[in-house]
Amino acid sequence: KKWDLFAAEKPGYYLTSSFFVQERIKRIYNRESEIIPPAVNTDFFMPSKDRKTDDFYLIVSRLKEYKSLDIAIAAFNKIGYPLKIAGEGRELSRLKLKAKSNIEFLGFVNQYALLKLYQGCKALIVPGTEDFGLASLEAQACGRPVIASAVGGTKESIIIGETGILFDGLTPDSLIDSIMELNKMNFDIQRVRLNALTFDKGIFKKKLSDFIFGKYRIFSG
Image (cartoon, rainbow, N blue to C red):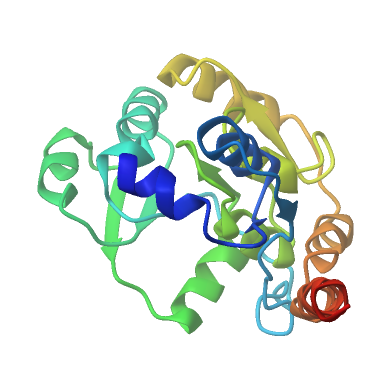
Protein backbone atom coordinates (compact mmCIF):
# COMPACT_ATOMS: atom_id res chain seq x y z
CA LYS A 1 0.00 0.00 0.00
CA LYS A 2 2.84 2.38 0.84
CA TRP A 3 4.54 1.67 -2.49
CA ASP A 4 1.26 2.12 -4.35
CA LEU A 5 0.58 5.50 -2.75
CA PHE A 6 4.17 6.58 -3.43
CA ALA A 7 3.89 5.51 -7.10
CA ALA A 8 0.54 7.29 -7.41
CA GLU A 9 2.29 10.63 -6.92
CA LYS A 10 4.55 10.10 -9.95
CA PRO A 11 2.13 10.70 -12.87
CA GLY A 12 1.67 14.30 -13.92
CA TYR A 13 -1.99 13.81 -14.83
CA TYR A 14 -4.68 11.22 -14.41
CA LEU A 15 -7.26 10.10 -16.95
CA THR A 16 -10.12 7.87 -15.94
CA SER A 17 -13.17 6.23 -17.47
CA SER A 18 -16.03 7.34 -15.21
CA PHE A 19 -17.17 9.46 -12.27
CA PHE A 20 -17.24 6.23 -10.27
CA VAL A 21 -13.50 5.68 -10.72
CA GLN A 22 -12.74 9.40 -10.48
CA GLU A 23 -14.13 9.42 -6.94
CA ARG A 24 -11.97 6.43 -6.03
CA ILE A 25 -8.82 8.13 -7.36
CA LYS A 26 -9.61 11.22 -5.31
CA ARG A 27 -10.43 9.25 -2.17
CA ILE A 28 -7.43 6.91 -2.25
CA TYR A 29 -4.72 8.91 -4.03
CA ASN A 30 -6.02 12.44 -3.34
CA ARG A 31 -5.40 13.26 -7.01
CA GLU A 32 -7.63 15.06 -9.48
CA SER A 33 -8.46 13.32 -12.76
CA GLU A 34 -10.23 13.99 -16.03
CA ILE A 35 -12.87 11.68 -17.43
CA ILE A 36 -12.65 10.34 -20.99
CA PRO A 37 -15.05 7.40 -21.36
CA PRO A 38 -13.88 4.38 -23.37
CA ALA A 39 -14.86 4.15 -27.03
CA VAL A 40 -17.37 1.78 -28.58
CA ASN A 41 -17.02 0.61 -32.17
CA THR A 42 -20.35 1.80 -33.54
CA ASP A 43 -19.26 0.91 -37.08
CA PHE A 44 -19.31 -2.75 -36.06
CA PHE A 45 -21.92 -2.89 -33.32
CA MET A 46 -25.17 -1.84 -34.97
CA PRO A 47 -28.80 -2.98 -35.08
CA SER A 48 -29.85 -5.94 -37.19
CA LYS A 49 -31.32 -4.95 -40.54
CA ASP A 50 -34.45 -7.04 -39.95
CA ARG A 51 -34.86 -5.49 -36.45
CA LYS A 52 -35.92 -8.90 -35.13
CA THR A 53 -35.26 -9.74 -31.48
CA ASP A 54 -35.72 -12.97 -29.54
CA ASP A 55 -37.01 -13.58 -26.03
CA PHE A 56 -33.67 -14.25 -24.35
CA TYR A 57 -31.78 -11.92 -22.04
CA LEU A 58 -28.01 -11.62 -22.26
CA ILE A 59 -25.02 -11.23 -19.97
CA VAL A 60 -21.55 -10.52 -21.38
CA SER A 61 -18.99 -10.86 -18.61
CA ARG A 62 -15.93 -12.56 -17.26
CA LEU A 63 -17.10 -15.25 -14.87
CA LYS A 64 -15.58 -13.87 -11.69
CA GLU A 65 -17.04 -13.48 -8.21
CA TYR A 66 -17.09 -9.67 -8.18
CA LYS A 67 -19.28 -9.64 -11.31
CA SER A 68 -22.28 -10.62 -9.12
CA LEU A 69 -23.53 -13.26 -11.54
CA ASP A 70 -25.08 -15.14 -8.60
CA ILE A 71 -27.70 -12.37 -8.39
CA ALA A 72 -28.67 -12.80 -12.03
CA ILE A 73 -28.71 -16.59 -11.87
CA ALA A 74 -30.91 -16.57 -8.77
CA ALA A 75 -33.27 -14.09 -10.44
CA PHE A 76 -33.60 -16.07 -13.67
CA ASN A 77 -33.90 -19.36 -11.77
CA LYS A 78 -36.94 -17.83 -10.10
CA ILE A 79 -38.68 -16.30 -13.14
CA GLY A 80 -37.66 -18.93 -15.69
CA TYR A 81 -36.88 -16.54 -18.55
CA PRO A 82 -34.18 -17.59 -21.05
CA LEU A 83 -30.75 -16.17 -20.17
CA LYS A 84 -27.56 -16.55 -22.22
CA ILE A 85 -24.23 -15.86 -20.54
CA ALA A 86 -21.23 -15.17 -22.80
CA GLY A 87 -17.82 -15.28 -21.20
CA GLU A 88 -15.19 -17.42 -19.51
CA GLY A 89 -13.76 -17.58 -16.01
CA ARG A 90 -12.94 -19.65 -12.96
CA GLU A 91 -16.49 -19.40 -11.61
CA LEU A 92 -17.97 -21.36 -14.55
CA SER A 93 -18.32 -24.75 -12.85
CA ARG A 94 -19.81 -23.31 -9.67
CA LEU A 95 -22.28 -21.11 -11.52
CA LYS A 96 -23.37 -23.96 -13.76
CA LEU A 97 -24.26 -26.02 -10.71
CA LYS A 98 -26.53 -23.21 -9.47
CA ALA A 99 -28.25 -22.51 -12.80
CA LYS A 100 -31.46 -24.10 -14.04
CA SER A 101 -32.02 -25.26 -17.61
CA ASN A 102 -33.29 -21.88 -18.82
CA ILE A 103 -29.76 -20.46 -18.33
CA GLU A 104 -27.21 -21.21 -21.05
CA PHE A 105 -23.45 -20.71 -20.69
CA LEU A 106 -21.89 -19.95 -24.07
CA GLY A 107 -18.24 -19.66 -23.03
CA PHE A 108 -15.99 -17.58 -25.24
CA VAL A 109 -17.73 -16.05 -28.27
CA ASN A 110 -15.99 -14.16 -31.07
CA GLN A 111 -16.95 -10.62 -32.08
CA TYR A 112 -19.30 -11.74 -34.84
CA ALA A 113 -21.18 -14.13 -32.57
CA LEU A 114 -21.29 -11.42 -29.91
CA LEU A 115 -22.82 -8.99 -32.41
CA LYS A 116 -25.61 -11.46 -33.18
CA LEU A 117 -26.26 -11.97 -29.49
CA TYR A 118 -26.54 -8.24 -28.86
CA GLN A 119 -28.82 -7.79 -31.87
CA GLY A 120 -31.08 -10.65 -30.85
CA CYS A 121 -31.41 -10.18 -27.09
CA LYS A 122 -34.39 -8.63 -25.38
CA ALA A 123 -32.02 -6.72 -23.07
CA LEU A 124 -28.49 -6.85 -21.71
CA ILE A 125 -28.17 -7.53 -17.98
CA VAL A 126 -25.24 -5.99 -16.05
CA PRO A 127 -25.61 -7.28 -12.48
CA GLY A 128 -22.23 -6.29 -11.06
CA THR A 129 -20.41 -3.12 -10.04
CA GLU A 130 -18.42 -2.10 -13.11
CA ASP A 131 -15.83 0.66 -13.40
CA PHE A 132 -17.45 1.66 -16.68
CA GLY A 133 -19.20 -1.27 -18.38
CA LEU A 134 -18.35 -1.24 -22.08
CA ALA A 135 -20.78 -4.09 -22.85
CA SER A 136 -23.61 -1.70 -21.99
CA LEU A 137 -22.61 0.60 -24.85
CA GLU A 138 -22.04 -2.27 -27.28
CA ALA A 139 -25.60 -3.43 -26.63
CA GLN A 140 -26.97 0.10 -26.97
CA ALA A 141 -25.08 0.53 -30.25
CA CYS A 142 -27.09 -2.48 -31.44
CA GLY A 143 -30.29 -0.76 -30.33
CA ARG A 144 -30.88 -2.97 -27.31
CA PRO A 145 -31.76 -1.65 -23.83
CA VAL A 146 -29.77 -2.40 -20.68
CA ILE A 147 -30.74 -3.38 -17.14
CA ALA A 148 -27.79 -2.49 -14.90
CA SER A 149 -26.84 -2.17 -11.27
CA ALA A 150 -27.36 1.33 -9.88
CA VAL A 151 -23.93 1.01 -8.24
CA GLY A 152 -20.85 1.60 -10.39
CA GLY A 153 -19.94 3.21 -13.68
CA THR A 154 -22.42 1.48 -15.99
CA LYS A 155 -25.23 3.84 -14.98
CA GLU A 156 -23.23 6.74 -16.46
CA SER A 157 -23.82 5.44 -19.99
CA ILE A 158 -27.56 4.77 -19.57
CA ILE A 159 -30.40 7.25 -20.02
CA ILE A 160 -33.01 5.91 -17.62
CA GLY A 161 -36.26 5.10 -19.35
CA GLU A 162 -34.81 5.76 -22.82
CA THR A 163 -31.90 3.36 -23.20
CA GLY A 164 -32.34 1.20 -20.11
CA ILE A 165 -33.16 1.05 -16.41
CA LEU A 166 -31.26 0.56 -13.16
CA PHE A 167 -31.92 -1.74 -10.24
CA ASP A 168 -31.11 -0.95 -6.61
CA GLY A 169 -30.31 -3.29 -3.77
CA LEU A 170 -28.18 -5.80 -5.67
CA THR A 171 -30.63 -8.59 -4.88
CA PRO A 172 -32.38 -11.11 -7.15
CA ASP A 173 -35.78 -9.63 -6.30
CA SER A 174 -34.69 -6.09 -7.20
CA LEU A 175 -33.38 -7.39 -10.53
CA ILE A 176 -36.64 -9.25 -11.16
CA ASP A 177 -38.62 -6.07 -10.47
CA SER A 178 -36.54 -4.22 -13.07
CA ILE A 179 -37.00 -7.00 -15.63
CA MET A 180 -40.76 -6.85 -15.15
CA GLU A 181 -40.65 -3.06 -15.45
CA LEU A 182 -38.65 -3.26 -18.67
CA ASN A 183 -41.16 -5.73 -20.13
CA LYS A 184 -43.82 -3.03 -19.93
CA MET A 185 -41.69 -0.45 -21.74
CA ASN A 186 -41.07 0.28 -25.41
CA PHE A 187 -37.59 1.31 -26.50
CA ASP A 188 -36.88 3.04 -29.78
CA ILE A 189 -33.94 1.28 -31.46
CA GLN A 190 -32.53 4.42 -33.04
CA ARG A 191 -32.87 6.43 -29.82
CA VAL A 192 -30.99 3.73 -27.93
CA ARG A 193 -28.27 3.65 -30.59
CA LEU A 194 -28.02 7.44 -30.63
CA ASN A 195 -26.80 7.38 -27.04
CA ALA A 196 -24.03 4.94 -27.94
CA LEU A 197 -22.95 7.19 -30.81
CA THR A 198 -21.96 9.85 -28.28
CA PHE A 199 -19.25 7.38 -27.15
CA ASP A 200 -18.01 6.60 -30.66
CA LYS A 201 -14.30 5.93 -31.19
CA GLY A 202 -13.91 9.15 -33.22
CA ILE A 203 -15.15 11.20 -30.25
CA PHE A 204 -12.81 9.28 -27.94
CA LYS A 205 -9.81 10.01 -30.20
CA LYS A 206 -10.60 13.72 -30.29
CA LYS A 207 -11.02 13.97 -26.52
CA LEU A 208 -7.79 12.08 -25.94
CA SER A 209 -5.76 14.10 -28.44
CA ASP A 210 -7.18 17.37 -27.08
CA PHE A 211 -6.16 16.32 -23.58
CA ILE A 212 -2.63 15.27 -24.61
CA PHE A 213 -1.87 18.32 -26.72
CA GLY A 214 -3.46 20.64 -24.16
CA LYS A 215 -1.22 19.31 -21.41
CA TYR A 216 1.79 19.29 -23.73
CA ARG A 217 1.33 23.00 -24.41
CA ILE A 218 1.23 23.64 -20.66
CA PHE A 219 4.32 21.49 -20.10
CA SER A 220 6.30 23.02 -22.95
CA GLY A 221 5.50 26.53 -21.78
